[in-house]
Image 1 (cartoon, rainbow, N blue to C red):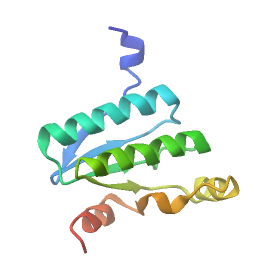
Image 2 (image 1 turned 180 degrees about the vertical axis):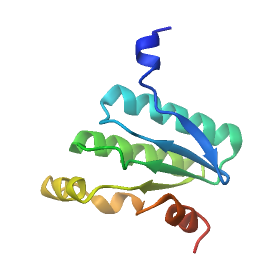
Image 3 (image 1 turned 180 degrees about the horizontal axis):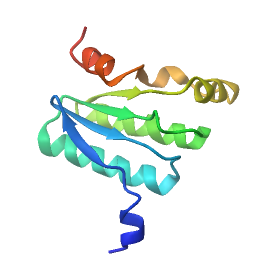
Image 4 (image 1 turned 60 degrees about the vertical axis):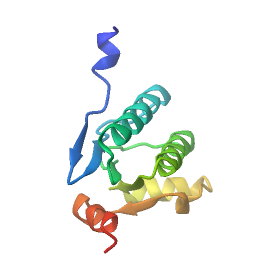
Length: 122
């Protein structure tokens, strides 16, 4: 086991019946692949009603990383989990718009509380 890489894994937990992951560093391809595996596995294992992906700790997000996040949300949808991306910073949103990235590919929320309401259909 490569402990140096294990330390970079994103903690994933359960919150109100949903899988919750909070990215507190700028992600790379490998980190997002690990996160995808963890989210899919835990969603299936616990029969989670949804996934909350908190990205409020990200300061830089390129188009490729955003596409990886979008692909992860699509995979989760295929197993019946609604995914809500929480806390996208305005600067990141503006940067992604400048790259002509399709922001409508994800559902977003400003806070975890708002995301839980969206999962409940409110």
